[in-house]
Image (cartoon, rainbow, N blue to C red; front, side, top):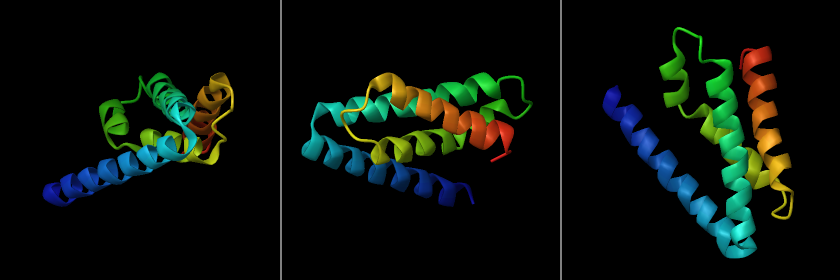
Length: 102
């Protein structure tokens, strides 16, 4: 089971890096900054909201906040202000996971 999870994690990182590289190729460095801002907002919000939870390390290691930030960033235009991308990542975790239990 652990090997399956490890292989799945490696595939997810490899595929996400290819998608981000394609976004940078087509839209420039602005796309990378949007990806970083949205992902950072999602991961920091998850760390902030769930830091008192007994299963806190497991929540950060599952990668769901990273994936949420990445998917959000890939739907945003590359010219969006970075604070909006950061706020979008934070709000998506704050509402989706903290409030609704996602």
